[in-house]
Amino acid sequence: MVIQKIPLENLQNTRDLGGFMTKDGRKVKPHRLIRSGDLKDATENDKKLLVDTYGLNMVIDFRTAQECKDCPDPRIPGVEYIWHPIFEEKASGITREKTVSVWGQVLFYTP
Image (cartoon, rainbow, N blue to C red; front, top):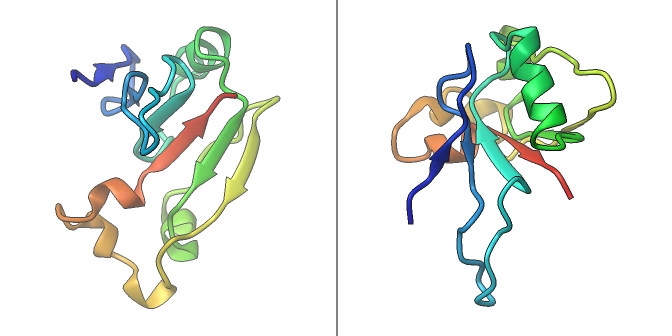
């Protein structure tokens, strides 16, 4: 399974998770679940491509409050933002470790 990198101007690690097998044996449809790092450097063209081509309508941010404060994501018109940290504040910085970095990322979900 090859993870499809999304060609954006300033978000270098944004990927379409379409094709991943789910626990029940189904596959994630392309353009339905996208993962990325922080969005602070997104250009207007990046945002437009994500909304227009990938149907972006929701951002789920798993970072701690401090991580969000240090590097806030831009708000994108028409896109719902949900903050749902998966680490306690005392674990702040752990998401920068290679062993758990995927959990500290922002996920885009387009139903």
